[in-house]
Image (tube, one colour):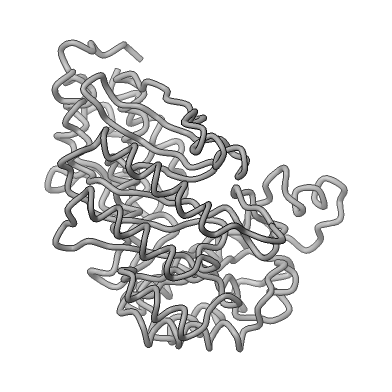
Length: 399
């Protein structure tokens, strides 16, 4: 790919983040137990110094505020780990400090991830009072045997009870489900998904089980001990069933793995997918930040105690990698084409310094892999299954 002139496109690149918005991600690294499929930066700790951790987050919020003053904040996301292990008072103080520095957008969203085992009515009421207005629950399955197989600590009954508590305290509740599990058949997934969709949920994230190296499942798979994983054909059928049933329930796909009723799409996740700016605070948190010097990818130290101590020492162990114009173009296409709405052709032209040629994609359009309408370029249902190839051809059309 040709190198885009930094000088000619500097003003466009510096301002581009505004098209995607601005968010803050808070990573809480602690869990009650490590799930065997999880490759997130999460850790089991016997005890947590809540005050010390809260103050570390507050320090980092103050530091990043100096770099991003006068921005309007679209979203905050508490992820992990299990953020619902945080006391509501900690969440309150973090949000209070965030709102001190950045004014909220009119449709401001604050999401907190929760596991069913850490849910109680008093805690959820406290989160709502603190300013959380959306809950994302890690339910993962509505079958008890599969919950055990996934290493989850809750039962289906506990998950449903936790969901009801969340619904009593929040207008917006999402939950995660994992399909293509061991010994799972397509039609059994259809029955389970219909049951989930009947629970008055307005947003579902449905992920195919992937075996990641470095996890307990990855180790078992390498030793030939992870039995009953669906064949690719069955896994693809389960993906198709997900699209069919969610659309029929009025919750169409708006991103590869995310489905929502109209108006209930995750604002924070769209900051990522629309390639906005976001601050990542906490151990192993990633960010994208634009300054007058350009756009940067940020990443903090993975180890919880090392990260926290570096904050108190003023060393702030983190990496800032400058993103070239070509880097930004690639990330924009990679993230944006995950969305059903796709990417703006105008923005694609700006980020490619005018080199994008729609005509070079005519074959993909004729094959029904991608579409172009109202200035948006998007992957079709067929194209979404071959998204890596679609992305390759779009970037090739920018040469």
